[in-house]
Amino acid sequence: MHLLTLASNANIETILNPAPARHIPLQFYSKIDHLILNESEATYLTGEEVTYLDDDAGIQSTINRFLERGVKRSVVITMGARGCYFKDSDHQEGWIRPEVRAQDVVDTTGAGDTFIGAFAVACAEGNDIGHCLNFATRAASISVQRMGAQAGIPWRGEVQ
Image (cartoon, rainbow, N blue to C red; front, top):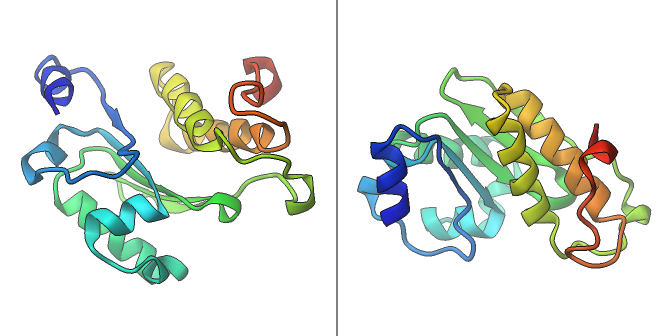
């Protein structure tokens, strides 16, 4: 929370992945530019059952709750093989689907970290949210086709 405050005060773009999920005081949401969480983290922070995210209406409602709490630019909920659903402050929203078949999945360890890291790289390069999410999804899709968390992370050239 301290680092969010420092970054926000210095107008530095912030990305928060609350993993593992912990309570976030309401006053800190306005310091988050991009909130990226998985299903269990989203339901923990909203108090909903995970089945609430089984359909688009539940996902959209959950994302809107985070935006209403003050997240500045985007909220992304990652859902493994289903892909991720996002909404940004310009009201663009929708699914980003992975390009990997279930039978090609070897090890999902580290896929979330790969997604977050690739998203951060694409954001730092000044790309729009759609590009950032597609880049992150491609990176995570590659990582699940390999064994090991660190060994599974693709090189940049592999993601292009």
